[in-house]
Each structure stands twice: as structure tokens, then as C-alpha cells.
Image (cartoon, rainbow, N blue to C red; front, side, top):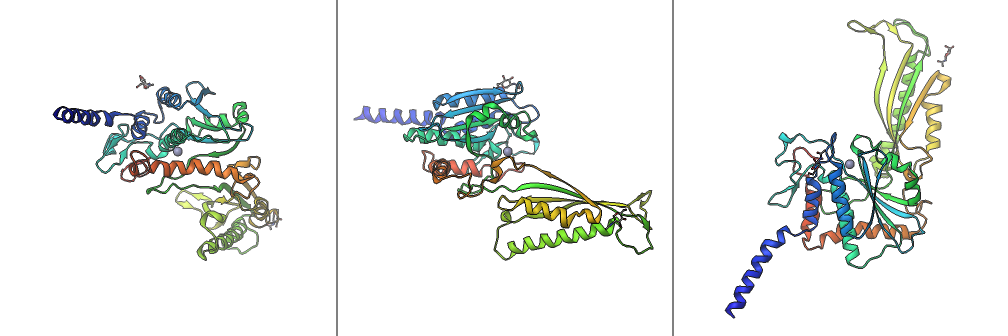
Length: 388
Ligand SMILES: *[C@@H]1O[C@H](CO)[C@@H](O)[C@H](O)[C@H]1NC(C)=O
Ligand SMILES: *[C@@H]1O[C@H](CO)[C@@H](O)[C@H](O)[C@H]1NC(C)=O
Ligand SMILES: [Zn+2]
């Protein structure tokens, strides 16, 4: 009896010392955060080593693709029961933005956990938590015996914080990517300060519009029609009316912010400079204005183009315009907005994606570390001064 008690005592001691150092989602998350992948000198060789070792522990096929030397894309593959169907791609970036070490309560690459369970680290929300949640969700699903219908790919891309030119950009344009036959991509969203995992869809597409007016210059004392300023002001008025009509829909509760076209004036450029400011008695011959427009996928881009050409910058008013769109029409992905859309051909899309999404949140909650993990992975940043 006594012996058993002593054994039990030792056994519990053993657990006490062994458990905290055992690999679990938290320690794996910390390990990822401790790798300094801050721009401008991210240590990609270390993050690659780490991710490949996790991939091995999950029995996933892995591949390292370098379109540019030293900028690895880590691509993991979980083969589905029907690999002929288009696949699901879970993307995240491995790099993080730089940290001002002296402004942090704890060193940004220590991944310190405080008494309340919060982890402090650069990249904890943007976006190493997401990358790790993909893998932990897969770990959980695999151990529960789940087999996906579609093949699931997980990509870890470099250099997102500096534009992604040597990472996602080259990847998306590559034959390798084409071969994946991707049907849907889940990517970065906004971190959640509570235990709800928020899904974002219908990302609005930026259109940056610059309209330019020209007109006869003239003396500041003269009244005449069609000066550049007058012509531009007519346009600005028209843009403002449109803006108000969209905003009214939001104010009336008929539409959400993300469902209307937002327009905000970003700059005004006009006037003839003088040594002390601007020449005050001259009506200039040119004037321009820039607008940041955000277009939801439910909006009709053609009718907006028509509005710009006919109302906001009509050539009949001697106006010209340039519009810069972030996503071309050729890219179908910016159009996926609801599951009724053609790019969500049938419900099984949503089903598989939802299994993965709910695994992120609910399965994580019910784990061995239970409620804490979601708190850890989502609350992490809320208290830093200087967050990712
Ligand atoms: C990356 O990290 C590894 C492991 O800590 C280290 O040996 C190596 O020197 C680091 N590379 C750079 C470029 O800092
Ligand atoms: C456009 O420019 C032409 C040539 O400068 C001018 O004759 C005409 O009045 C202008 N029209 C308007 C609407 O500004
Ligand atoms: Zn990010």
C-alpha cells in the first residue's frame, strides 16, 4: 500500500514535469512564433525546417518550391477521397512585420505566456496563428478519422508583408498552382478578440480612380463657363451624391458597409503655386481629384464603369480618368460571394470548408487545453502595445 502511494507520488511528479514540456498545440504555436521571420531578414530556412517537420508528423506530402532563391513556398497536401474534384487551398504567410523590441512588454520572439494565458509575440495574429490552426485542425481531423472528399492543400508563402511578389504572386501565376486545380482558397482575415472565429467573404475590390479636368485658364475676377475647377467640382458633386446614396442604405440598415460601393476622396490637386502659397487671381487650366472606391462583388462593375465615364469624368466636360483596379475581371476568385454564385457550384463546397472552419474554432475549444487554446490563439495580441 505504502509502496503504491509512493509510486503514485512519483508518477504524478513525473507527469508534473513531463507534461508542460510535451508537444501540444500551444508549444507548437510558441515554437513557430519564436522563429524570427521579421522583414527585412526573415529566417525562412528555420521556418521551413519547422513546417516540414510538422508536416511529417501529420503524414502530409510536402514540397518546397522556390521561384526565387531563398524565398520558399511550403506546400502541403492532404489527399482527398476524390482528388479529381477541385481542391481546397489553405494559405498563410510565414513572414511578419518588424518589431520595435524596446516597446514590447515581453520580447517579440519569445512567445511568452502570461498568467492570464495570453501569448506575446510578433506574428501571433498576423498570421502565424492561422497557419498553425490549419495544421492543428488537420491533426485533430486526422486523429478523429476524418477523410476529406476534396484534396486539401496548405501553403505557407513568403514575403507577404513586402507585397508577395516573390511568393504568392509567382505561385499564383505558376504551372504548379494551375495543377492544384484550386476551387476555393481560405486566407487571411481579421483576428478575433473573443472565441468566435469570423469568416470573411465578399472581399471588396479597391478601384483607385483619378479624374482630371482641363479648361481654359482665366483671370480670377472673370465669370465664365467650363473652367477646369468648375468642371471638376461638378464631378465631385456627382460623386458626393452617389456616396450619400450608398451611405444612406447603410444608415437605414438596409445594407452592411461591405455591401455598398464606398467612395472617399483621397486627394485634390489644383492651383498654380506661388512662393507664398498659390496664385490667387488665376483660374487654373487643370485640376484633378483622386478617389478610393471599394466595390463589393455583388456590385455590377460595368455600371460603375459607365457611371465614371458618363457622370464623373465625361469627355463632354473635357475630363479624363484613370482607374487602377487591384483585381482584374479575369480572376474569378474575387467574385465568390455567396454559395448561390456559380463559383460555389454546390453545397459540398461549403460542407468541406465548414468542417475545416468549425474545426478551427470548436474543435480547438474542446481540446486537452480546452478553452484556453482559442483564447491563446485569438486574444494573444489584444494587450500588447505594439501588435502584429
Ligand atoms: C536562422 O536560424 C537558424 C537556427 O536558429 C540559425 O542557425 C541561422 O543562423 C539563422 N539564419 C539567419 C540568416 O539568421
Ligand atoms: C472642352 O474643350 C474645348 C477646347 O478647349 C472647349 O472649346 C470646350 O468649350 C470645352 N467644353 C467643356 C464642356 O468644358
Ligand atoms: Zn498578414
